[in-house]
Image 1 (cartoon, helix red, strand yellow):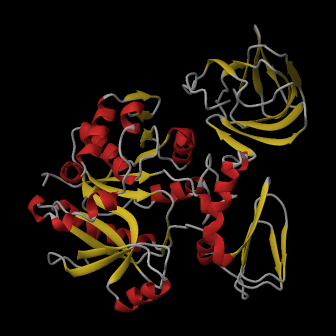
Image 2 (image 1 turned 180 degrees about the vertical axis):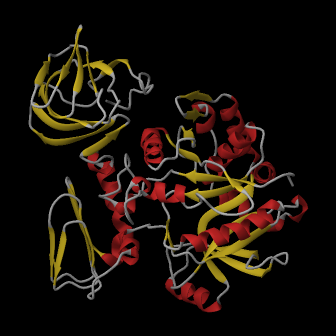
Image 3 (image 1 turned 60 degrees about the horizontal axis):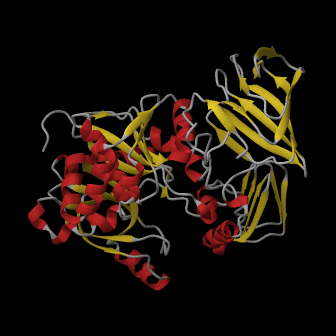
Length: 494
């Protein structure tokens, strides 16, 4: 055990595509970046749960593990809530939670410390933060002693969508900590009812606490192949801006496995390692928000059991979820249905079958339909754009650029662009000329002309862009300079 004061490192796992919450969650903007339970996104809620936690130990700025595509979105959301010193590790490709936590442990140890890591998925909800913090403090007492602790949610219904942990005897004279007697896969309804009635089974939350050195030692015993791949990837890692990039080729060769399968379930069979496995019961209003019925369950509901989000109206409806993103949604005579509206797609589903939404997303992806991947509104490091209209040879976008931000210096082979400023001040580079545009002023960018749009002001810049040409795809961009380091990333545009 490391001497000195305890240092707790929140490791936030930001992978996952949240396909069961389509059409609100898309691959380019999945559920962890959505505001589903309040004004903050799920990532932001996860990051603030341990802020200002009282007593006896320090909490480091969080370390995020996310994929390359979401890096600017993650960084921006943390900055929006005042977290400016977070570390962000970029997975070249998703390899499940065991490699992700290994990257985090190696990064933490490279700084010369050995913190206790609290691994938390970014897409979980908690309604009782003080209770969560109390459970964290109990787990910390075990992790300090070299144990690997997990959190088991105290079940309140026979849930078939979660794996279970069977608790054993009280652990090491610690209050409300138990040895792990076993793990169980997702059960059928009858077995889930038996689990609930026994009182010995907890939902597997997917959260873990362990010292960085202890995790690496356990992985060396059970999955040395994962450890070796991650070590090679981190030895060749590079940094750009605020991001750490493990070597892509080394990490892509890493086997995929979860923390549970790689280590947690094997520990009880290896007492010689001296790493105990324990579970801390969690009573904090936890939900993984895995599907629309889970969101309905978390929401305030009217007397008829309806949850209404956004501009929604229910008449003669019972136990239904109506969610509006951009226009009025009216439900009439609905019973146990889910209706989710976005500007480019509408989902109407039986609440009992919302787990099947992922199959719809798979069909869209297989057919090449872009609605599985992106919203009409697309976020970029400089702001966002919304493709509000389009036809055979034209497209209209609403573009918002954050104060002080700038698009890349670029050109297009196939399209010309007209820009009209509707709010703020635009600094325009157009060929060899650079000039300012104010509200109601416009400019024209010819085909093949180098250009750049910047916001020199302290309020958001909003423009309407009209594109015209033979081809209007986002891959018709040639970059010459970019402050966000995207010149070599052909797959990411604008």
